[in-house]
Length: 100
Image (cartoon, rainbow, N blue to C red; front, side):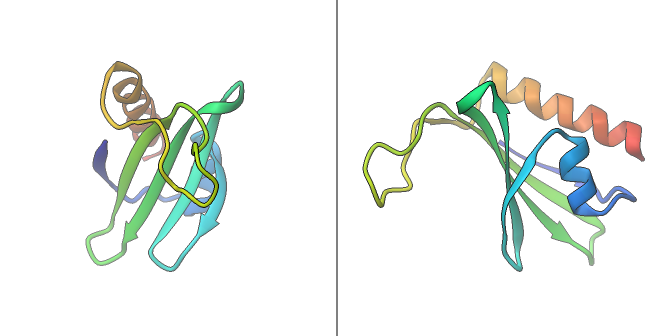
């Protein structure tokens, strides 16, 4: 599930932590982070891309149900839509509203 929000005043690393996520990897284009729901799986997986020209962040969210089945594979049982993912997106948006 993708959604776009205006860039908050917080740094992106502080923002990730306030959302309850843990950074995994940072590239020049985006941050890769997760929020665990107890054990290692299931977990929310979030990619955040910053567009400084437009002053906005693009969030790409999904729910990883389990780890990839085959070694060397990135494929997994992920949910990109549905009630749980939509609820997490709303939770994120609410926190972002409170920070602005």
